[in-house]
Image (cartoon, rainbow, N blue to C red; front, side, top):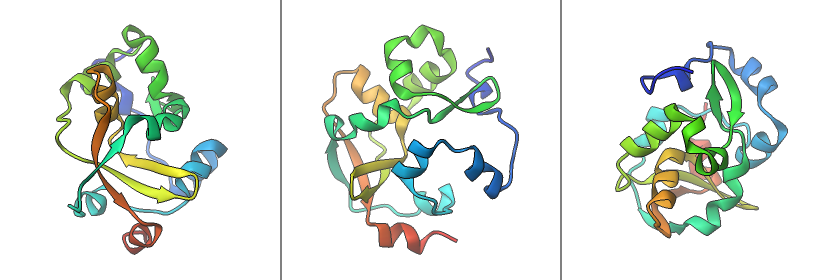
Length: 146
């Protein structure tokens, strides 16, 4: 296992098409197939609302994170349940600024976080009940997708 310096982000670069092929069906169902860049998402700065952690609980079981250079290996709930087995992710959870809002999109089945899972986990571990969030409509997400 690598250090908190980035071993949990060490999966090799792949094309968008290969990434979509690798993505588990549950993740594709939750997030859709839009191609957006993180920098474009971060450029959207408001409005900020609060979303309860219970409304986001369904996302915690998705294998969103990398481990040992392989994508889609670790769910946020695994990190919550056995944090000592995931020191890279736990270090990132402990290093986040929870006042910075998560970015999410409203889907028919609920709100899906696009960026901010380590902030969500930090909030949960600290006993928080909601996270600040910028919740995009599907149309807003489409406007930054290319």
